[in-house]
Length: 78
Image 1 (cartoon, rainbow, N blue to C red):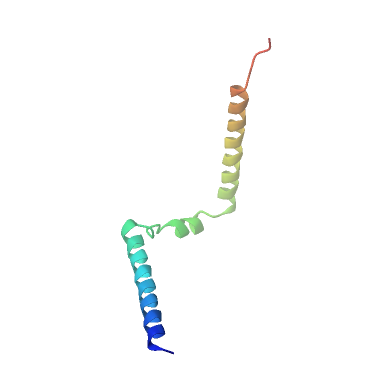
Image 2 (cartoon, rainbow, N blue to C red; image 1 turned 45 degrees about the vertical axis):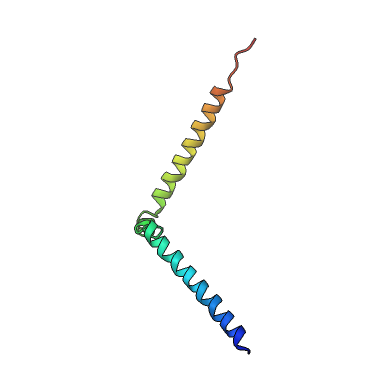
């Protein structure tokens, strides 16, 4: 390989490595990785009763939306 190709490959790889490092530092600074309790809470509260409660709450919310839409679209007879 010629030395020009080697210099080009080294400079591109160094640039990409520095870009990745800057992205990592930016993510750390802005708090992109601060969700510490997500997986712990997911394992702690993941049982059948809570899943059933979540499904029941979702059904209630859906029913309330449908009721609201029916009331909103209500037009008295002429």
